[in-house]
Image (cartoon, rainbow, N blue to C red; front, side, top):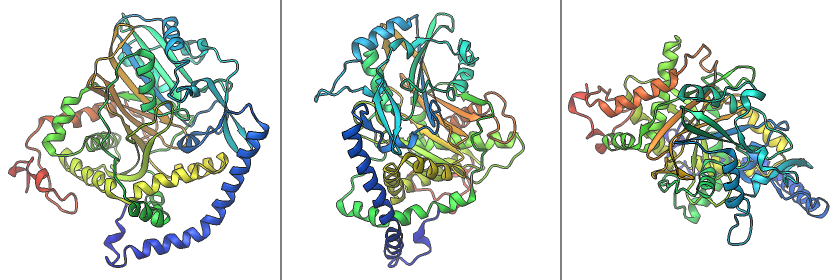
Length: 512
């Protein structure tokens, strides 16, 4: 994504974006206003004529409205490995006691969405209470090996096959789209708890809060520091005035199209899950090269893609188009989607891991200060006010070309977790978007250990992908950054201009 200030005189830079935005606003505002008026009329009719409907699906939730009943546009799957045996019956008892009637200070049910279904009314999606809700339908022993031929997980290898299948399994359209599956005899004497949920209900942070309440375990996570910008009134006004222009800066990425294959529902999905990485290792890399945590995740992900493409005989692109999703600080209580997302390009093809790392750091830093990220987020919020069919159409047009993959990295818990007195010894994250994106990379973990899962269609590289390829290359890059001191790096300002602090972490012999 090009920086518009590089080709426009400094004194003209603020004027041109505002002028272009003004012209676009003149065209878009009358159309958008008509939809807002129609939405207000729908809400009025709902309140007068449909008392069975609880609330309208709004904000980021509206991005994930399904195109067909029972077919989710995005899934989240989090697995917890418990050292011992725990039954579905016991978890249902904990849920009934701790979650079902859990309310906030105003008396509202915190996790109300878990007891609701959805329906379309006059072009908008609404939630309504499931009058036939039964906890046995949602918290139960693992049964997909009987109903959908998805194998029951028994160890680290089979759990990846299970995750690959579960992330696209359909929902019962008459029930709330979530379930907690209990797989006993995992690794012999352990229990695997698989929490699968439709992204329309919430994000990962909401699930972590649910875990705290349901299991009464701390699930302590570091406070979010990224995306915690303090904006003045003038800053916010500037973003609003230039919003349409900022959105046009993503057009070159969309025009070029995706590098990897798109999502194909007829192709079998795969899951490559990395080994556990101690958070201390990531922190050591962060300190060694003076980069951000997210920089390491993105850089290692693209390193895996570069090497995997080379294995199948393809040339990796210099940059990879990626949709990034990161949580926002101050997450509201209950179930919601509270994050910032944007589309950009991150370095992929590089001569060394360190070169890629610093080029990635440049992109991360630029995104943190660029108004584009805020503009992208505001634009998504505006889009969610439109009828669901229009929202789906706009997203489908974008997903038809980009991004090649989506990356989500969530803070690992720093505490030891227990469920009914049994220690949580491991965790597996996964997720997928079924509306065009062919790969989702998700990082999360417990007790200061993190796993990264590559979920993808098997044709994502347009060639067969051997089991473990992506996760193995990912681990190799992490290990290389952590263990090698004398990597050679090209000193080229066009590739990555090193700051004084970054340059100090590399020996003089690294430069030619």
